[in-house]
Amino acid sequence: MLNFFLKLLQILKFSTRLIHVFKFVVELLALCLGRGLSMSQSQDVKLKASSWQRNIWLMSWREFRKRAHETKLAFLPVGCIEPHGPHLPLGTDFLIAEFIATKLAERIEGLLLPVITYGVVRGLSGFPGSIRIPPFALEETVYGVLSSLGDNGIKKVIIVNGHGSEHHVKAINKGMDRAWYDSKVRSALVNWWVYARKFSNEIFGASGDHAGTAETAMMVAINDYLLKNRPIRENCTEHLKSGIRAVPWAGSILLHEGENMIIPNKKEAEFFVQRLLDRLESEIQEILSGWGVQIEAMKE
Image (tube, rainbow, N blue to C red; front, top):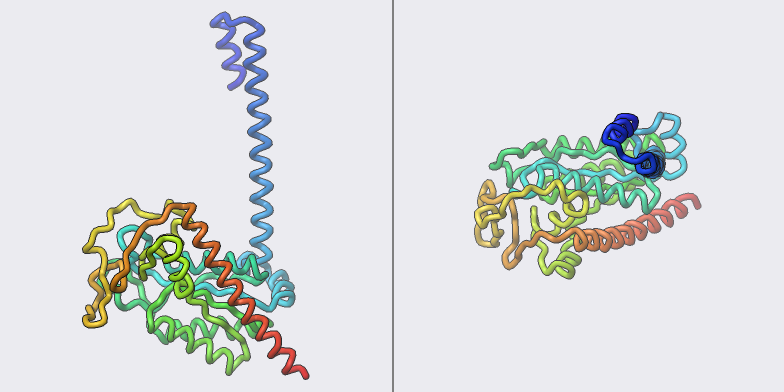
């Protein structure tokens, strides 16, 4: 390609000096781009190496055995597939859970487990895209995963949950209880939105519940390209009131009485996420510290 342009310049009777200058500039650009690519590739390799040390599905069994022995702690994200307004994807709950679990595993040095993408979906089953499993199936899945981790020497698990259905949360808790009494696997359930409400109100002046400001801010921070360019109309929203209940819910955005909703910008969303992660990390470290005291006491 370069030779073609050089010949073209000769045909057009450009001066020899100009041709040499053109060649020099092209080669310099190629060199700079090559270095940039190398740096990018190097960063990718570092990222992948970090993932190999954390994401268990990328490990061989020997690597997993070594890392499990070193950390004895794992993070399990759990979510579901259901509608989240006209502006968020169906997988919002498990995408947020996976994102938070990944960040916490980086901060606290734990293993990351594959996300459980299916959950107990009821209220939004009137919309297309609701894919549900029964509560007993989720309970058995959580119990089975925790028990198997215990068999592999991982006795501490942090479950990051992205779906707030009462039946969904209850199923997870039942699986956790059984895993402790049967296999002595300690676990903690993190319902991130409970902590997010405070920061959402402080930063955005709005919180919302399902597909509201907090969840939207999380998705903006994760990848704002995932947001759909669709207007949010009043009939998309159901305002939950204590004196009336619809089955199924009439809107795919759920707000409590007095709540409003905004779509934050990227900078605000990232600040919100950092505040949330700092708080969750602090809470988890406190739990891990307490477990450490228990474990030492049992050795005495």
